[in-house]
View (cartoon, rainbow, N blue to C red):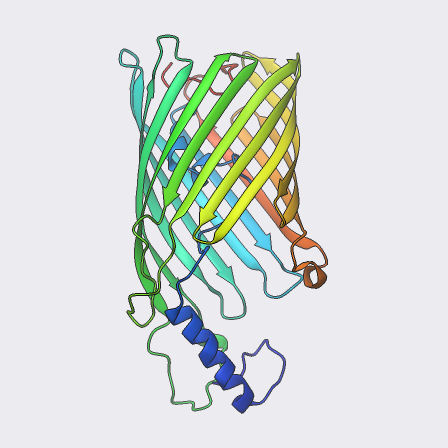
Length: 339
């Protein structure tokens, strides 16, 4: 192989061994941290934990998020995800329900547009564990297909007749999650969740080898809202993720101001500051207007890549829409999904 069109000029003899080495690394080494990654932790919560699917006031919920990362270093990492959740069953007498969720995402980076396109289907079950509907437990399973690969169109071959036999790898992934919700009154709630994804360690080898896989990923999440003032709340947050030898710890807190809380109108604004341990400092702004939730997040890079990135990390834009037949807005921060 020679050079890519977007790379700096260099001789074919010097570049070909480098490309061969990189290809071998991708083809044979166990891959780590290949999942999509978003800084908007709970704007679209099923991206973090499938067990959060279905816990909303309404009949359906739809979300869209876009992330652009490290554009100052090279070709930006670009990730887009779309989600949909639909209530399948809600039983007031048994205080439980069944929900269907779908996640579609695409992740691309570099001049060869290496990345992943995947989909997953979520089936979640939640149940109140007390008569007052203040305690809920949710369980979910997740499964879906995906394809990893790259686009060879920008590669100049040393021999024009030479072609790459395989540029994609198909896989299937499994996951699960559990979550607990507790809200004794309107001025306080607490939620805690744990999830595991890639539990079957899907193989993504281009050469059909047995040592190229996506590692299992585990996450734990805790969030609370404390209504300390009539129109102002504090929302502390803690997240921990583990994928083989890669660990991520995130701590932060949001301040939320309720502009309107009438029966038919819900308007609020929040601002948050988070710190991802030894990696990034994040600022998030979010606005809620009735059934819509908008969010903008920016990551300032603090890792060892800082000299190259000039502290420019990533930005995300997210929007969530909740569909409800009931025009009356429930005041609880975690609306009961049954009533």
